[in-house]
Amino acid sequence: MNAHRLESGEPHPEEMSPDRKTPVERGASLLLALLFLLSTFGCNTTPDKRVLQYLNTQGFGNRYPGNAEEENWVAISDTLIVSDSYHPDEISANLTVDIDGTVLLPEIGSVQVAGLTRTEIQALLMEKYSPYYELLDIKVRIVTRGKKYFIFGETASQGEQDFTGDLTIFEAVTRAQPKKETSNLGRVRLIRADPTDPFVQIIDIGGMIESGDSTFNVHVQERDIIFVPPTLLAQIGYFLNALVFPVKTVLEGLAGAFYSLAQFQYFTGNNGIFH
Image (cartoon, rainbow, N blue to C red; front, side, top):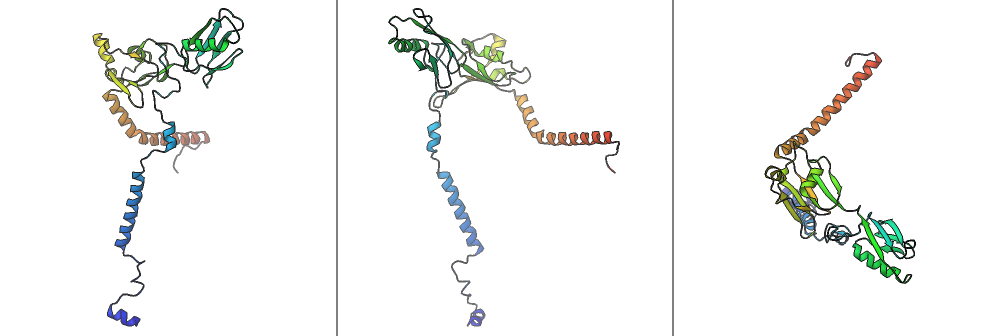
C-alpha cells in the first residue's frame, strides 16, 4: 500500500500531519507571535502605581517649600536661634534643623519647624511654652544655610550655589565665571522647574553688557536653575571631540603601552623592540 501511495503521488500520512508546517507557515507564525509581544508591551502604557506614588506633584520637589525673601522660612540645615526676654536662661537655644525637620528645645522636646516662617515658629513656641510660663516674649531668628540655586553650562563653577537673597541673573552668571571662549551669553536660560507649569526664559546677558539695558536682568529665586549654553562653534568642537574620542583613547593606550615597553627594555639593557 505504501508503495502504491508513493507511486500514485499521494502524500505520506506523516506529511499530512497538522503539526508539520511549511517554512512559510512557520515564518508567519513567528511573525504573528512577535507582533503580539510588541503590541502587549506597546499597549502597557499605564505607569506603575509605585512610580506614581513617588513622582513629584508640586513645585521643585523639596518637602518644604517657601519664599525666603517674602518671609524667611526654615529649611533643613538652617540654624534656629530662640530667645525669651523674660526667661533668658531657661528659654535659649541655638540649634541646627535636623534632617527630619525638627529641633530639640528645652522642656518641650522635639518640635517640627521645617517649612514654617519666623512668625509661625514664634506663635508655635508661645503655645508650647505657655503651660510652663505666665509671661513670654519669644523671639526667633533664622540663619540661612539650606537655601540654594543651581547653575550649569559653560561656567567655571557649576552645580549647587548658596542663595543669599536679592540676586539678579547677571550677578549669578558673573559669580559662576562664564568661559570667555565658549559661553553664549546671549542665550542664557532661567529655568523655574515645576511638574505642571514649568517656566523657562531666554535672557540676553551679552546684550545687557553691550547696551546697558537691564530690562531682562530678572530676579533669581531660590531653587532656580540657570543654564549658560555653549556657542555654535563650541558645540561643533564638542561634537568633533566626541567623534574622535574612541580613536584618541585607543591611540593613547597604545602610546602608553609602547612607552612602558621602551622603559622596560631600557632598564633591562635590551634596546631592540622586535627581534
